[in-house]
Length: 157
Image (tube, rainbow, N blue to C red; front, side, top):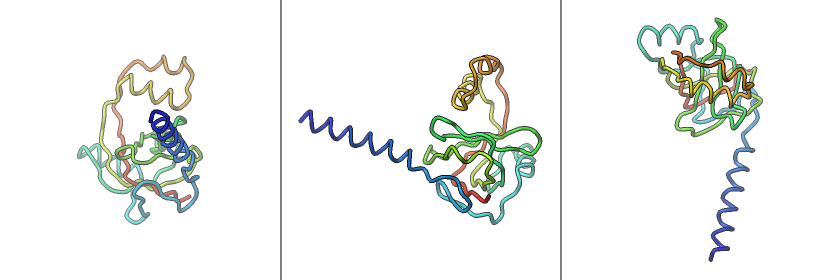
């Protein structure tokens, strides 16, 4: 019985690893999560104005990916067009991004809000991004930023 349970656990673990490796490469037209379309998408600057004025934004945003979690694709950052980036996470960790998505233009569908990001969380993101120990140690104050929780992502170029 123990051998059967061990075999079952090994098969489940193997399937989980295979599923992660099977994330479809980023290419025009590929969708992740619930998917979305370009129709009605606004640029990040317009979304940011809405968030700062009203506290949140629900809808679609077009942006270029600048960084992705190198561990498993569980977050990414997109260019805000002003030299800053916005962190994007995925609803209920229901899907992940491929590591080749950096540089691609995407449509995100979901909700954006202003959040305070703790030092610990900033350092965690920096580790996931492969930053050096010195860069990580320089992070020593919380910061406010707009964060986006995406239910779907579409690669448009």
